[in-house]
Amino acid sequence: MEINVDHIAKLARLALSDEEKELYAKQLSAILEYANNLNKIDTTNILPTSHAIPMKNVFREDKAIPCNNVDDILANGPETEKHMFKVPKIME
Amino acid sequence: MFKQTAQELHNKLINKEISSVELTTSLYARIEKVEDKVRAYVTLTKEEALKQAKAADERIKNNKDVTLLTGIPLAVKDNMCTKGILTTCSSKILSNYIPPYDATIVTKLKEAGAVILGKTNMDEFAMGSSTENSAFHKTKNPCDIKTVPGGSSGGSAAAVSAGEAILATGSDTGGSIRQPASFCGVVGLKPTYGRVSRFGLVAFASSLDQIGPLTKNVADSAICMNVLAGYDPKDSTSVNLPVPDYRKALVNDVKKVRIGVIKELMGEGINPEIKDSVKAALKLLSNLGAEIVEVSLPSFEYAVSTYYLIAPAEASSNLGRYDGVKFGHRNKEAKDLISMYSKTRAEGFGPEVKRRIMLGTYALSAGYYDAYYLKALKLRTLITQDFEKAFAKCDVLASPTSPTVAFNLGEKSSDPLSMYLSDIATIPVNLAGLPAISLPCGDKNGLPIGLQIIGKAFAEEIIFRVAYTFEQNLKWQKKDQLN
Image (cartoon, rainbow over all chains, first blue to last red; front, side, top):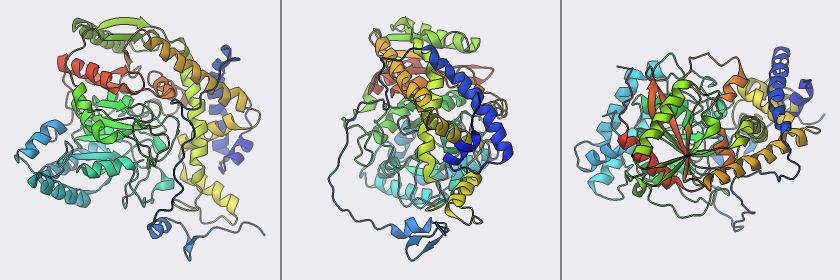
């Protein structure tokens, strides 16, 4: 199976090395080859299950609660300034 | 003291034969002695633990709010958030992450008065079946340190097995509690999906993940579930049903209980010694009055493929949050945002996590979504229906937990597919959201063999009853290889 590893890596935001690309191309096709056994079974009239326990939308009251851990949250930031997370430039 | 169960130690604590501080100190002495060989932990929290032990002793002294876990030293898997304490998921990308909050199960354990000894090693982001995918170090199986402890909750299973914790928490997405429990000769329960809150559990595959206990015996599993289980408004997938007292299910009686043996998990691909051991286990249960019936779940043939499309697809989405912006590792050289994301992720994730992100991204990408992801969701329906049909004929299902005993370190790490195929017995249970336990039923040259008992949704009690009866009547002792 041919897999466009460059395209998938771009979608996944992973800057893979050439060795990694080669390895994953090989391993992913082996895995997907195996997964093609799913095609042996006709699922035309089968509904998909995305969740094991049937569940409808779960709502909660829209109520403000105090949140006093802003400093703890910001402490994990790789780069912060004036109570904000700082990132490299987004546009020229 | 480290060899005893939570139940035995609880009695000693309330009878003032020992204090929690003494117990906790003796656990750290045990850790000091064997941790070099086992390497079950990534972080030890001795200072906090001794404070918790002191507080527990106070509670016991004043006989105020004493629970069965008050003063009991335990370990928490490192994918469950602990406020102010590193929570790394055994990943480089989270190696400096200090959560600003506790996971709900951590809050519950603290409220019960438990003592948290430390955080246990795991496969990175819970992706793996051997704990070899930890970014930090490999954990060894205390039953034979040449072999893996299983995974992904390998650190928790090894800690309990080696007496480095009285019990531990694990998480199970495709067998990550049950398979390491089986490899290390301990008891591991994956509760029904929704039974235990996932709030503060670092997400891997949200529709499959569930937290549960790893313990030395079935009674401790029930005791721990009494604390862990219950509705949590912070987890919208947790289910609002009353929590029974699981200890009441610890009844030594399986008369008339119908046990379905899964034909597909007793055939080819399962090691002969494992099959013999499980057959002997069923014979014992039959002698005790259980009715053994054979059931067939033909869709199991597709379970591994189904799981390895759905779980990576969910993971590729869940792990999108590791982008170097708000926490964790960041590449410092990148000049623009997109390359900062891509380089951060390439540096921060290990090989198995990248593999699964790639696989999941592929299965969800335009042109392949219907053929892979949607197809897998439909197979998930068929697998769930097969369980429903089987449960029309029996009360619980039984199978081996794993097709093999613990394998050697390095044996499967170069072939991801062979590693994935070893999850065949545990994966279908997660896809259907059902509860299942693994408990020891024998060994092969000292390496433990696990018996898996599966129940209907929210039928943990019948699982506990069958498992407890089996344990009470099995004459088998785990061999201690560390002394």
